[in-house]
Length: 60
Image (cartoon, rainbow, N blue to C red; front, top):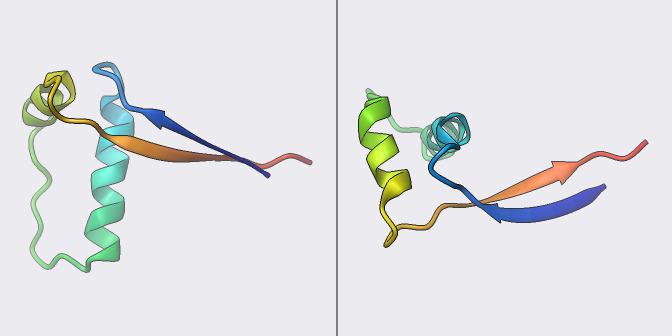
């Protein structure tokens, strides 16, 4: 197994949506409404905000 980390870029909207979904499940957020894609895109484009994700690659 190989674990790497990377910063989400402005084109990584699908990964940010998945990340928000993880937080929703982990913190058991009741009645949570996913922010709009447009809003999340503005966060990704903001140079003062950094989203780091861990990627796990399973090697066989």
